[in-house]
Image 1 (cartoon, rainbow, N blue to C red):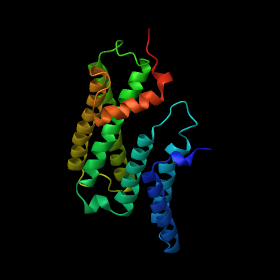
Image 2 (image 1 turned 90 degrees about the horizontal axis):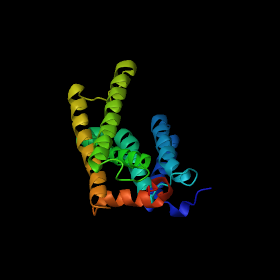
Image 3 (image 1 turned 180 degrees about the vertical axis):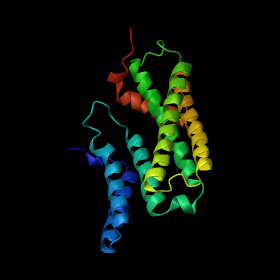
Image 4 (image 1 turned 120 degrees about the vertical axis):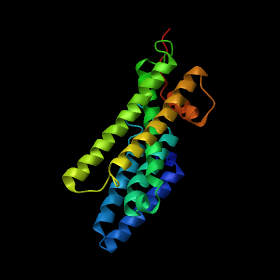
Length: 213
């Protein structure tokens, strides 16, 4: 069993909001809203429920960031129609997700080198992290196109224009995340917010980042 006392307060508030939404939707027979709220609840709970069951430990700030992103994407974006109400909502989420994947890419690639910065120059790790994050963004755009073509959805909104803007902000977010990894190595820890996120993950998973002698 996971220790929910370690769960960030923002995640608990998100769960409370989703439970209220589920109950209200079922009472009002709004099944689509109830379904999306339930899926959102399950996805935001996964990092917390399983954080102690795998070899990789997830810092609380990572769990909170994942919960906020999923909540903003599915519940606020789809149920509350923030995509339609705020033109910048999709831009912010794409930038944030690309930044996150840039960090994930860096942490994963750095892990393969067992934390040894001398096996590959920081710039090479940063470039690979950038490519990883942009690739995820490109695959997502293919998914949106497929959903629109085969299931009659409107995930691309304005079509090509929406896709190109998404890819551009994906590149911006990926660049930010990969640069955080670069400066983390160059400055031996860095001093920025994203560098502190990287440091917290590596410290919590020291055995995965063994440095070669």
